[in-house]
Amino acid sequence: MHRDCWKPSGIGHSCAVKSPFRDRWPGRLGVLLVLVIVSATACVNVTPSSRLTRSPYLTAVFADRATVNWATDRSDDEASLHWGPAPSCQGHTTPATRIPIKVRHVEEWQWRVDLSHLAPDHEYCYRPFLGDTDLLDVAASPALRAAPVPGDASKFSFAVIGDWGQGSSQESSVLRQIGQSPASFVVTVGDNAYPSGDEDSYGNIGKGAVFARDQLPLIGPRPVFAAQGNHGFLQNLPYLRNFPSDTIARASGGRYRQDEYCCIAPMGAATEDYASAWYAFTWGNARFYVLDSAWADGPADYQADFLAHWNGPVKGCRVCGQELTWLRNDLAAHAATPVKFAFFHYPLYSDTSAQPSNPFTSGAAGLEGLLASNGVNVAFSGHAHVYERNVPQVGNLVTYVTGGGGAPLSRISSCSDFDAYALGLESSCRAPNPNTPLDVFHYLLVTVDGDTITVAPTDSGGKPFDLQTYIARGL
Picture 1 (tube, rainbow, N blue to C red):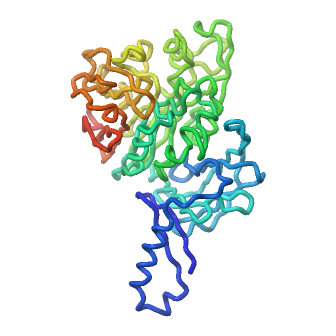
Picture 2 (picture 1 turned 90 degrees about the vertical axis):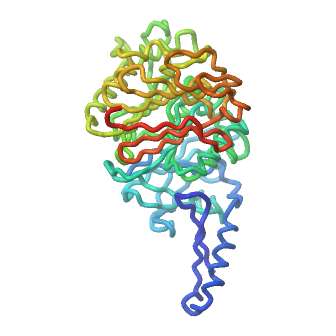
Picture 3 (picture 1 turned 60 degrees about the horizontal axis):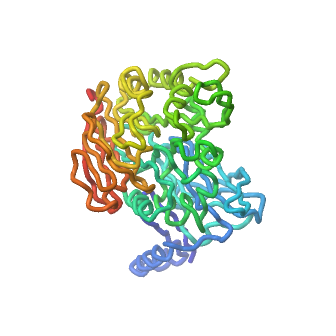
């Protein structure tokens, strides 16, 4: 008997049993069903090859393309991806490209494969190989579902998480909730790996935060679209290579690479190589803007972000102002798209003293006004380690702060007029005080059903709170 295992877009694993005796013994269907159940159980929690150091995960999924990523030791110099339509996972073998990395003084390879010619909304599965070694051994083949055709108004959900790369048990609980949710993909609002965003911060299967067994793998087959945060802004190459989104950036005219920044007042005479990371993608009838609104920590970090990204061209800095120009153009090109979301790190409004509101991007003349005047329905940010929903301040743009993904929580230090509902460490505003920190660690489950948007914040125990529904047209 030969067994093919794969992981579908739903929760858990499935196994197909292919028996050469099935046609000969049609009366044994009940026995075969039992074998299916036993085989399915056997597929769960199987240890993959010891040569695999980061489990396979997805980035940059389109209706016709996707990027598959994983990491291994350096026992072989060649890797490939065997893939095809589910459930066979067969039909194609694509060579992988590699980047050398070092995690806790151990040399590894970070691999990626860019798939193309996928059919929209179709399910595929795949198996990564290092040389001739199947890295998953007898474990299930991960699933990949391509995005629907742009404009498809079918109902879908996605998850939003921020300030999550800590490796805490609370974070594991939040990621596990995402893995059990109906979300098709995950968008982050930055701070994806603590403390510094280097490869040690990301770790691997054996130890670390993001890529440990009880961290990112818990979300299952959901692709990740990751915004940049201040943690990892200085050591930004790991972010660029661990969440490769250059294909989706090129397709949207955005940018996903390291650039030389200079010539703005907070930098003085310094020149720094920082990541430029902004792009947009369409999923169904919605346009998603993953923006770069972050900077290295410092007394003028909000101002530096504004001058480099949101204040137009800067003499001597070729990349400065390009994000603003690109965003204006893309918003205009997608004026007819009924649902629009924006994701970035620094909050427009925040009631925490350590990570306060951003005076440079909030307001009608700032990034907030640009989004509001171009039909963006909801903007999500992080940085402040709290949950906060704010009353629209410019037009009908609703803003959220979702910084409770796993890093140590902050307190709600005030209760401003703009604050509609907020939860922090042993604190709240216009909301019941949390009983424990577990009530504050959270992610957002967002569902789009035609023109209806539902935002369901969900705590680390799986309990929804502050459920809100919006109508995209006329927000």
